[in-house]
Image 1 (cartoon, rainbow, N blue to C red):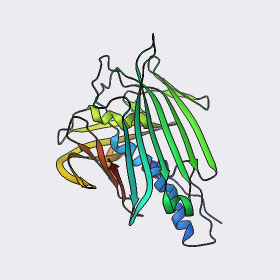
Image 2 (image 1 turned 45 degrees about the vertical axis):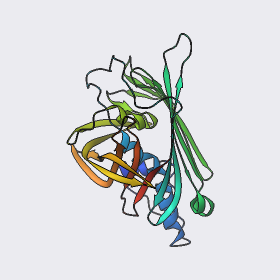
Image 3 (image 1 turned 135 degrees about the vertical axis):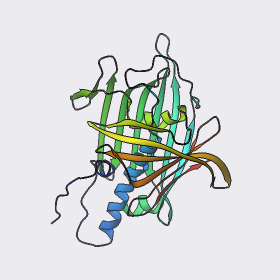
Image 4 (image 1 turned 180 degrees about the vertical axis):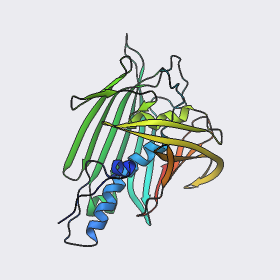
Length: 285
């Protein structure tokens, strides 16, 4: 009989997610892999979300000016995800579509999709998760966010609507809560960091909203260096992402993001080091 767990670390609880299931005691090996793969499915999204999340907006009010962006409508970035010694564990896709309708404000439709592949998908767990957000193209503020999380036979769907004028968020379960400045959904934050300065030593704190839970994360720009992804070398800026607990940044997962220093600000590499094995997310050209 399994014992209930007590969540101490909010980010670990977030990584488990509502789709986390208790392993069967029938085997000592398979339950371990089920646990790893379920968490892997979440870290594909959440570690990358955390790493890419940042904001240069004022703490007092939403921005009123148009912000230039390094992406274009139609951009699609594909990533390979590896775990420990397994080079093919999952795939991650980021995409951006520009939506323009007569008489309406121009918007971006931003998306994140993650799925398990190969032996992970066939032998252990079918993961197919997606996050989508409608974003004002001028202010880059989220308007509507939706999530569809499919883990095996379990499907969870939810949505969030951002009411910036009244400073509240409306959740699909009918509940509302205050909307603090610099709060973003999972899909929107994937693109925000590409619009801000990345000078070494720069630090920023943001709020990441997951349904009704707000997570505080600290972004620390570390240094510029060179990395090789596949057969290509990139000049990148390395960024550390730390969870803020009781006003103290924690580096438990050792999340690092590598953004290209060219005009596109591409997230070319993401790494995390949970206790059960290193996760690496690499851009595929």
